[in-house]
Image 1 (cartoon, one colour):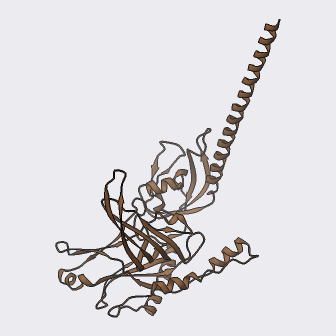
Image 2: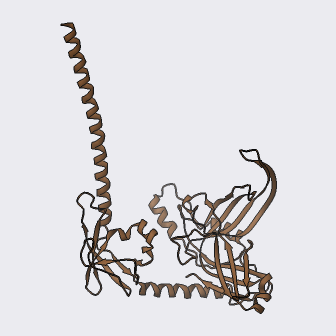
Image 3: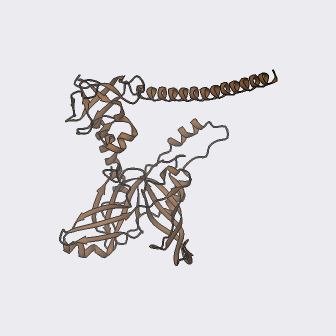
Amino acid sequence: MKTIRAYLRYLITVLLLLNLVHLAYGYEYENAGDRMKAESQRKVKGLQSRIGNTYWILPNDSISFYEEPKIGAKSFYVTKTEGITITDWISTSKHSPEDLSYYKVIFESGEVAFLEASTFSATHSRVYGYGRFILTEDPNEAKIMRDKKKMDIQKMIAASIGDKLPPGYKGNNIKNIYERLQQKIPTKGQFEKTEEYEKRVQGVKINEVYAFSVEDELKIEYSPDNENLEVDIRLLHIQNDDDFTNYLKNKFISVKESSVKATSYVASNAFGAKTVVRKFSGIIYGVYAVNSLREDPYWVVPVFLNLDVGLKVAEAKKHMNSLKVLLIGVPRLYGDPLKFAFKGKYLAKPTFDDPVEFSYGVRGLNVEIVEIWLYNFKTGNIVKKWEFY
């Protein structure tokens, strides 16, 4: 009898444990299922939020429009800039509605077509470059605005710089401009709501154009066979103390170095090999380009901004040893929090192949660079102008 009772107690214990395990795993599965469902609903809501939006599609052979919302349907590309309005979102998958879905669109001409919803995703835009062909504003109206903006800025350039430079032109003092723009952003009031403060900050504008002569060493090469001068402006990998998203963008141009110190020390690796490392430290004053300075920003993280100049041999000889670059731009609010000026760091670790260490503090200006001039520092003659409006 005792043996039977002990066996029954053991059996009940095992059954209780199995039930607890089942409940625990069932709870986890249920939670996982709920999370997946919630995530799917969030994606669907995001896709549906574009219904009613209007976009303009530039001519291209990358974005396909379909006659029906299904794989294998007859497709076509746009051959001229056309406006489309999204009128509906259609999913073709019951299990994962957000993965394979289409937007129903109507063209300005009245034609109806279907577009894969994934066309608007950040991943597809980055990998396939779709973002280059999809505009959120009428390109004709945008061109009018750009032309007006260009005219206004060129008037400021003419007023502050002129159309030619004097010999030995050094541009604006970036250190003084940095210190002045640091004070431009108002401090948040004790009883001021964040939304109110951000709105007040966004209202601060600077309608002035500045010109900074780049003192950083330029990489200049001339090909007499091609009669081409190539100028490379170094783009630094800097870290913004406030906004770490700027770290990988390589759009910071050093204008001036200050308080530079050069030291050296002996370093060794894990194998005991030793080398002398030269270390440079100080302050770099420069500009962070808030606008694009390259035609195709999707594929390459540049180390240099490359500028080409067609130049006859005689002209190249005349300018070669006196060339400097002038950055012309307008300060813009940028970053998180929004600022005209920011502090950061430029750090580069030494290697055995290149035993040089850099440890600089950065004092940067957020600037929309509108023009870059290549000029002869001795004479003031302008060799070439590039525009980035």
